[in-house]
Length: 473
Image 1 (cartoon, rainbow, N blue to C red):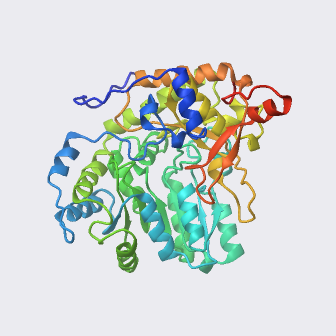
Image 2: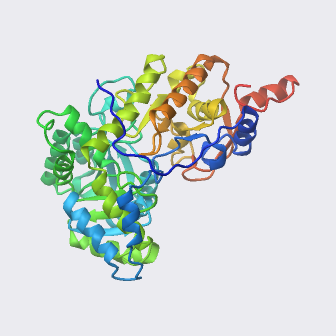
Image 3: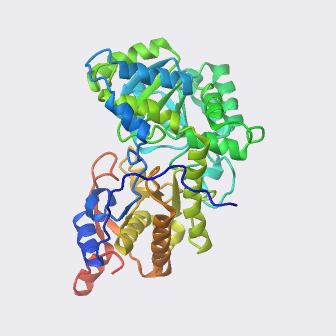
């Protein structure tokens, strides 16, 4: 396959600095072995998230200079609505400060306490908002999504039999809506096929169920359809995305991903009644319906960015860079989720640290070890992210992953080489690594602010040895 160069030129740079091992040891200890609590200045290559970390284009910066900062009725809102209608096909838009704000609003609007919300694997903040609104989440993704080694091309697909079984069990009137993520983050950035989306739509039409989408990474999903699904190879991604979204009643959108901005999100929908309710709530929680907690310049940047994210050349490079990192790790025998997804390479931490039981937090441990090795910051996506159930017990997800999340238009493949070499070094000494335990845990979304310490410290105290400072020390 020929090399794919960046489809842009770099005309502004931000210096980054490599730290010493001693500095990183102090930093991870101060952060409670939680990469979310590291200071940015202590990080060399930041692969914590692709949310709000993209580099904006010259057109986006130019649009920001023209932002209308009127409190109500700003033309920047009109620009966003026009862009959403043109690119996504939804007539109504309600901006929010970010995707989480949109999740909050739609959960309050569509869920009556006691109802059920099926989805193709949970996402952390989405499930929390659904549960806070009184809903019960049900995973209806295909079984292959829970198998890191499965090569199914559309591991994000809804299992139609599971969806039908839930309808039969609780009744269609007790299903608030089905939420179909495109792509599925927690499964490894895996896409949903157009055929599966159509099939889910048919079931929803048969029973009168609302079909919603977490469309945060819709452009990447559309690109995978172009690559992998018959009949789409010669169609532009923008056209595929428009067809894909035509099957949904509405979407939640985090503009911080496929709109290529540093802050922002929105709800988009076809039903004016849902829009009216969203506008009533957004005033309470976010701001006026025409700005939703954002500055006018943010709305303008988002309006430009969502068009740019549907460019075929941009997506070929974007997904190609993620694939490049994945292939380097695979060649070295590092276990990762396959096929490589759209926004990140997910390391199978359970296989990587197969000597650690899940309750010793292998993914959290591995993320800390990668930072210690090189200053590369990654994210846990396993038992810590899954949280606790209603009885207070740890949820034990089948996937115990570390996410190496690649920001858009930020790093080069040379940076990916540094990342790969670091992960491979840690892999070569993996049997030396010991696990972590919680020392602080908040009641919800614990992965953001929990703190940990090495289990090695317990063993050292029991044996009367000096306490080691670090996991794996």
